[in-house]
Image 1 (cartoon, each protein chain N blue to C red):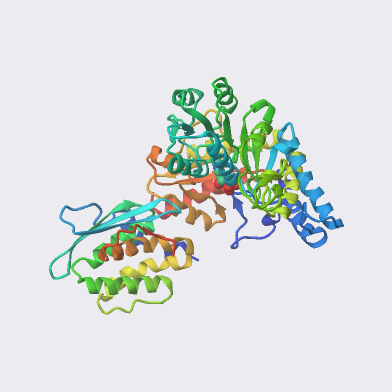
Image 2 (cartoon, each protein chain N blue to C red):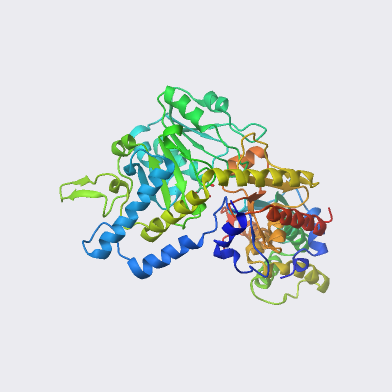
Length: 154
Length: 405
Ligand SMILES: Cc1ncc(COP(=O)(O)O)c(C=O)c1O
């Protein structure tokens, strides 16, 4: 285990200054997620336009550097993507965090993949995986219009 | 007391954990176990095992005697009047649920109030919340002050003529505040209100004398007292245990069972339905002996020294903010570091073998009040040394470095 893998510069940067933090007015989908073990929570807001494209996305919440960075990078990455593409990215990301060594989706550019891979350090810290995945599960829930609050027990 | 010798009695410190010497600062969560306790469980299972209270063969009688010996040890340790005032449970949580459930059944109805405090553990809130749902009772919370303590006045302020029971912590597992429980009991009794003390954090660290405190109920967690998991104790004045209905139904707690009806067993069996955590109860006797051997006064003194040293050290560390400043405080230091989330603190400290807890410590009401989603917490036990605190301080500095503070 190496803390440097976990706390890479990019994570510290996004953790400290999360992008897309806040709420905007004309969102049409949203969902909440929380981590009952530690009390961290996230609320994802997004606007899908008539072409099912993510026109805007933002989040509110509080949590550790990993969870804030993950939400920050995620929101940056899916803005402008189509719903279908977003779902593919989410699946690919969660697969990478769970077991795969790399990202496979063709939707993301190489530099975007590098950015996402900065979160792969959590694999060595099983207790912290849920910090990285909470906002992603919450994004899925928002897209699916689920009223269920996402909990990070899986 | 010689801490180095005491530490040697705990096998967990024999080996490195993830290549580090273990700096265990999570005893408020659960304490480590001395060898005598672990060995007792092994010996019981390998040489003496039988179920208690049911058969007449040699092993069954011997096991029953051992089981009952722990009851007497606990009775003496906490100075209860009668051994039948000691009920074994699976933990403090079950002890509190037992009281909330049975007292609630018999004495609470719509509009009645239960008085808690803002610093209660979820174990001393959720069981009462069940009654709020089932019986439409109200729950009131005595407020904490800026120092993270709950004063007698804060309790008094919330007592009304609807208050039917008061249930408060002995020692806060977050701010470390020691509540004036004796005065609270006096005040409550002057108004005919019974009092339950959640003694989870009190029992491992403070002298207990049920005659002096005079509370009606006192809940204890065995695993925080150098004992096994799966054992807790409910102390209750005999009049209550005789008066209240049974909690769980099953074998062992009955007198006579007929198709037409059932009569319940005598104390203490009335509240111990089914096969209990026999081995753990028997081994818990060793925990009591272990603590008696060191002496609770010595434990208190040692932990106070650690606390003073820890507070001084962490106060000097810039960016560390200590939660609460109670005048009477036990060996718990909760803190935050500006710019580093408690979970990140805990992960980074763990890398150096410093085990602390991060989160809301099952006290969300308190954290909401403090307006903090989470805190980091270092808590002490008999095996901790000033060196442990120095290592904590160093690890905090490493944290600050990683986060460029
Ligand atoms: C103040 C307090 N109350 C209740 C509990 C729950 O005790 P147990 O684990 O024995 O059920 C704890 C322990 O986490 C505690 O610290």
